[in-house]
Length: 242
Image 1 (cartoon, rainbow, N blue to C red):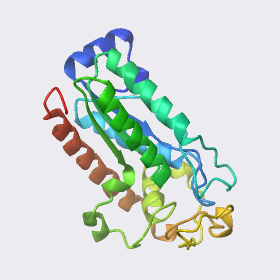
Image 2: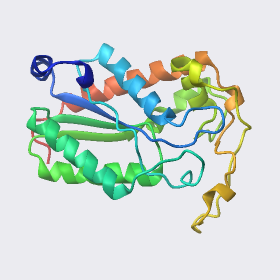
Image 3: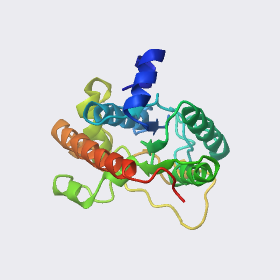
């Protein structure tokens, strides 16, 4: 059930059927010259919607903005602070809790380290604040298991490459504009840089030319299965998590 599409009565009926809710989180950031800026949000929300067709679960409207680091200076990248993200997630979960929901899966289409760390940090806080909840935090990258590399050719594919291009060709082919040059940036870690675009001019981490619709279909189906497994796992938890 998509929360944005149901009525007040529909929501009441939904909570009687399930106390589990998916909270999709994305970003608005560059994805090379071939994928739309909202790629992370479009992918994770599509995944969540397909999960809802299989499992009894509520799906919250997606959060479009995330914490950006290495892409922050590329054209079109619009980010928020980690503090803002933590406050936003905390408020949303508190509100859903007041509406009777008790099991929360925060799933991010954006895999940035600072972004995911902020989600995990607020998740730990929520466990202490709200009685009787179970909560999971993961990014869509966590669903790209070793099994996936039976049909994905590019190792170390991370951003706007083979994986994301394949998914977008499957779910939103009209938004894919050709391809971009393969790129595997090298940052001077652990040294922090003030201009990450200097080290990553094309905004691609992987090889988008190897992406296709069939791989995207398999990736989405694989992701749906993994999230459904997680839903069963989290619903098997006791009412009170310590």
